[in-house]
Amino acid sequence: MPGAGEVIAWDFPDPVTSDDPGAFRHTLHDIHERIKLFVLVKTKHLEDL
Image 1 (spheres, helix red, strand yellow):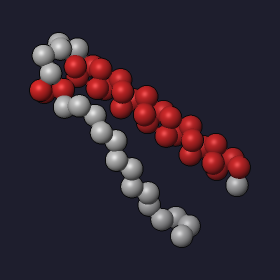
Image 2 (tube, helix red, strand yellow; image 1 turned 30 degrees about the vertical axis):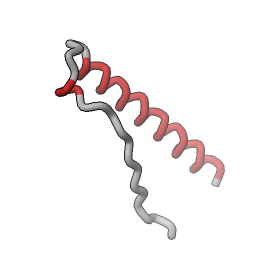
Image 3 (cartoon, helix red, strand yellow; image 1 turned 120 degrees about the vertical axis):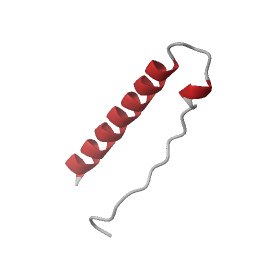
Image 4 (cartoon, one colour; image 1 turned 180 degrees about the horizontal axis):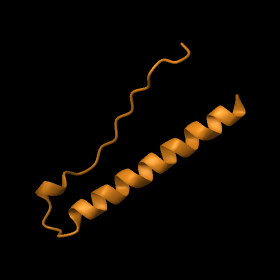
């Protein structure tokens, strides 16, 4: 259905449970990269329409 929403679930480790002092930074980086990839794929899909 055109205009219908899309649900995507990404699983990331909870940085609160990590002993790594950079855990929050790593999680933020992973989320940022995933969003960039999502936007790239969606943009490419729109160009192909």
